[in-house]
Image (cartoon, rainbow, N blue to C red; front, side, top):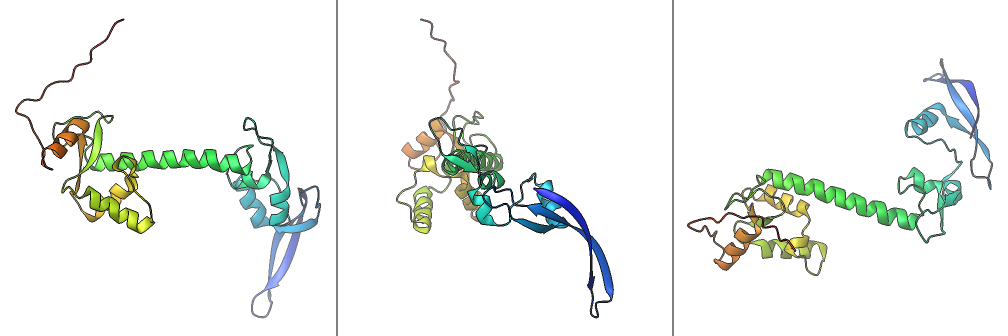
Length: 217
């Protein structure tokens, strides 16, 4: 915690002929097992205040060993530290649960963002029948080189096998950047029909219209 603010002056320059003035803070380590009194620069305190950090620690060890409370995850009695809150790993969660929960949320968030970017670049519609419902749309390799694309990713990352349904959108974005026009969106029906038609788009003479049938019991 901050004990007092002191005004200081110092000399600088080649011949120490320039006098400058500023402030420094006399603070005490917030770790109760330490309690050391030390000084911090005005710039450091302002940066912490801008980031919403009010605690003061003399070193990283005190930050890592100062427990703030008990994890609020159901069935967990582990303590969480101020370090986890400073790093943004979680809110009143131990390190294990904060990384698991927030890491998964970030992964889902970035996957949705990349998927939206990919679909926007591909027109958000089926290239064969014009279907616009995102629930039906799938990414298709125009030149039928999807297997080679996945094998290349497996070789680069050492993965055993990446299925087309589990491919991260960023791999498609990278492929599309290197091969403009190499990807397209197809609905599930048109994508399956292309596969059964030997890799060529299948356009029937007459498209049938989907109808929603309500089943009453």
